[in-house]
Length: 322
Ligand code: CP
Image 1: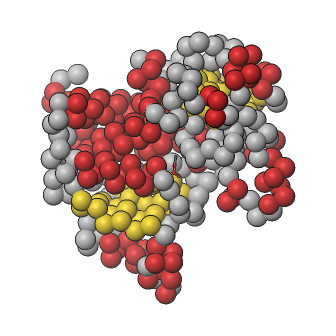
Image 2: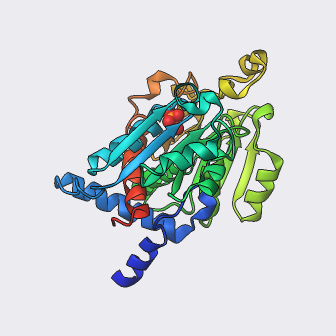
């Protein structure tokens, strides 16, 4: 592809919102991979520290976050940008006085070039994007989507296998409320030949409408009943947490939490040498700590680092800096 074409594709991100993985296509995902690698290369040479100079981003996180909040903040600051950071605005901003989400973002866009929002309510970032003139990035909304998590997961697999098509993997845990897996399965469905094996308590299985939507796109999805059915030739296992905060009945949560746990024994029985083990984190017992030192475990290393790098790439593209 010519430099001119590449530049025009990069332009397609300019000042755009990113609310759902559906807004991307295989080419734009590859551009994000390429831009991420470009930034990694620059940083290794101690260059690129001014890519976001003059950019001010507002981080509005209405729901707790460790990785997404800090990696966006680190990404922007390490590339020379600055941030207005609001954690828990529900109790510390004028939201407590009844200010609407729409008014809140319309105020913050006066101070900033881009708004990055996490919210417990599915669809809140769409409302924010409709109200704001500044671009809005969804940093996770309820049980809806988490597009930047899917991008960091895909780039992690791309670095390891050199492709994100024709991969076979297990996606386990909370597939009902899990926004990370909703975005990730959508991303996999864009590329040919991917086969995903879904492992969840029946109460937390992928909603039938999403199952239908994804399979219509051509991806092969197979629901497993037990760990014993995991194919032994997978390239990855992607485990997720059963999310206590999505349950109104704590007894129901206690009943289904940690139904499936990655242990050295399970890995020995159903794993293989080439595969990788991934998790968006936080984890609360569903991956045994003894796995952490296994070189196949990427959840505390590659995935976390790539979270910052892809967010650098994404913000630079949206701000028209690369
Ligand atoms: N993976 C993820 O979204 O982590 P945080 O909730 O800590 O941001």
